[in-house]
Image (tube, rainbow, N blue to C red; front, side, top):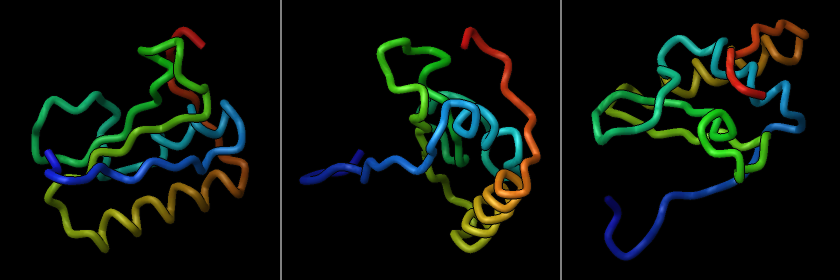
Length: 92
């Protein structure tokens, strides 16, 4: 937990489909809710919380090398830009 502050919150995904698709293209991030572990996670929040915007993704950064995480995100965004879509299963 952060003392005296909070983690940044911002949106990147333009559509629900992009938000649902991005996690499937990541190799270093597991698609899961954070339970306080040390691994990097990504969660499409609308899958478990219907009150969240459908374009919201929650990232929990773990102990992996930051450059590896950055590169993983970059390659996933490139795949989305090329139109590659593998959608998460869920209630949306």
